[in-house]
Length: 331
Figure: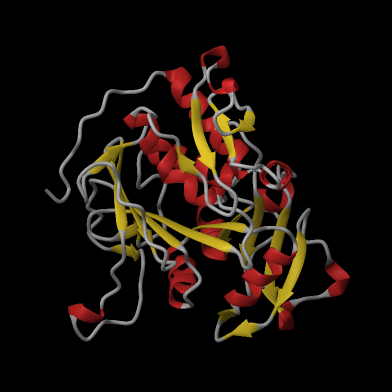
């Protein structure tokens, strides 16, 4: 049944730690290039964070079985026999562990209320979703090369955009501020916790005042009242930033969606009714339901929130091992 909750045994802490180690290793660019070439039948990663050829006895050494496997020319996949709860966790994040692609791989995320608001009318958004989804955001940052937010998100929340809640390096922080409305006093421009790039329109770039706080300035072509997001994605990809996480806000995610740049869109829905506020995803109204945007998706339970994980890149989502539309719990 659509939306049916499926009870899974909660995995122990060691199992989830091992799964996270495997994901970090699979997402690492340096490890990928060194280990995937000339790997014969393929490579595997076990729960202890070790690489080895598929089928190697190391699968069983030290009590850590193989979690991820990859054949030459393919994406990572969950190893057969992986416990269901661990497999659910791995499958949610594996799209971020793809081999290098021609262009950037872009994932958007929004947390919203039942009535589709990401904040109150005054901008209060801390926190619409619960701690489990906040933890998910930190995991997404750790697996991506860059995290992208718009100027309004920085102005309203003054976020740090780091991986404080999980192991793994913080991504490059990319702030979209076409007209340079933000002041350099915001934490992302001053704390030095991660490399930061301020993206503005070419007409608002000034060589004389670079950098902006502790951030570099990237000038890009304007498009309407914003930036050419295709040019932004390409510029970041040229810098070696191949997985991009668009964390907010609603206008920024919606513009990436409208430009056809999102490979995936995640929307976390909280059991909350705001009663009017700042909307989440917006797009031109469809004349009929047949023209609405539909795509393969998976559902994940995160505490009290439900995460919809949509595939928009045309390659779909592998059929889950449980009923289509069933909800899988992420710890």
